[in-house]
Length: 239
Image 1: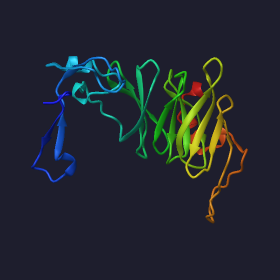
Image 2: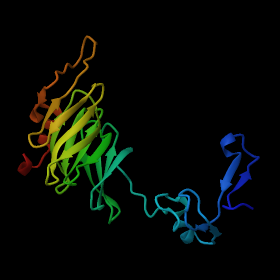
Image 3: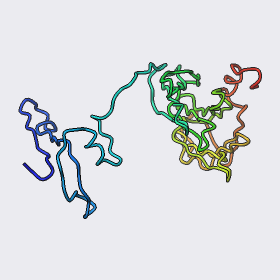
Image 4: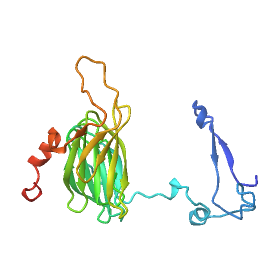
């Protein structure tokens, strides 16, 4: 017996040192935390519901339940969720991938949005009006309208699109996007309204065949191969 009820169960049937002793704690309830670290009192319980009431931000794997498995288009990577929680945008990493759109209420995949060379990350803008699909293989960021769930515009970079973040206007709309680029010592700043990237710093390759960037260079959206592909498959009223 001990104050907190945690015991170590010895497993002699394994050679894995991390599994030699497995700690087990029964369901319990706790009193106040006077020292801000340990509970003053501990009472043991018989139900998971009682045990969960003492937890603030810890996810108890025993309480999780798979309600449904949703087939995806391909291998998933990162996930972005709309502010209202009704849509998930899943990055499909495969070369013929893109973005799978999941309806969280119906619990089903409702759409697939093709993006050149697949998508590594998806990022939702602070106002949830757009989701940005970043491709490391295609070196393109595709901006998708979350209302129409169609590509709105895209911008091509000299390297793969890595993590990015947003700056907002006073009304909460997106003002600028800051994009980390593969092999670029620095990042690109994208003016959201005009859809152009401004390069803030650059370390160019020493290889004989290379893509050379200059600090301050602006790259227009329409001058990218990926952008022209999206235009080719866009609806007439979107062109």
